[in-house]
Amino acid sequence: MLFSLKQTIFASELKKERGRESPLVFSTSVVFVFFRAKTKQKEAEQMDQEVVKQKIAEWLAPLLQEKNLFLVDVRISMGRKIEVFADSDTGITIEECAIISRLVESHLDGSGLVPDNYILESSSPGMGNALKVPRQYKKRIGRTFEIDKNDGTHIEATLLKADDDQITLQEILPEVKKKDKKKGVKEEEPKVFVVKYTDIKKAVLQFKF
Image (cartoon, rainbow, N blue to C red):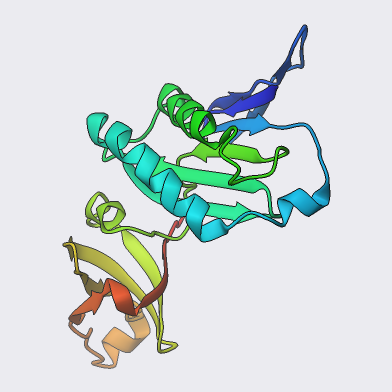
């Protein structure tokens, strides 16, 4: 079996195969990856994605609770690539990602739920990834978000509060230019409003440098 390891920010990817190693290269997210030998493509098409996602969530629940982690998302692509995203209120380590990968792998192997050539990745969500669960919002109070609602509305706002059902936001207004201030144009008071998670299509952190 061949695996690679990527660590957040100043991380490295280490590829190791029985009897040999490859040089280190830099990457940007915590990822623990298992690769499997190729088999028939037909097998890859037999994966019931919803069943696999549900099972992974069930298998990980005790471990995540024990380590105060939480499951963010499980993605399946190409019929055989499984990505498990987990996090905590203080971040997740390489060791924790490795433990998650080994646990999921131990259940998937021989389960008949996935093809023999499956690829498993366990990682923390990247900075540009959309938020998926309330706990992600709760750890980012005071941060600026770009939010697309299900009704097509686009919002740029600061996160003030978050609970299990909704978030409270304060809109970000364009700054009044000096020449407009001289003309007597006053700055508006930013509106504060509530958005339910069920109304959010996509929410991502905004980064300005």
